[in-house]
Length: 31
Image (cartoon, rainbow, N blue to C red):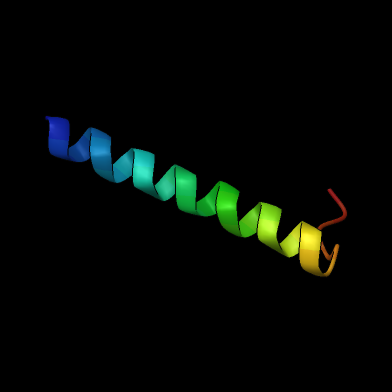
């Protein structure tokens, strides 16, 4: 199921991107 792998990779990339974006912009993630 390559489609599922691609979807998972895109989801992970989007999560990391939004996380890095939030940290660089506001630093609201205190994890």
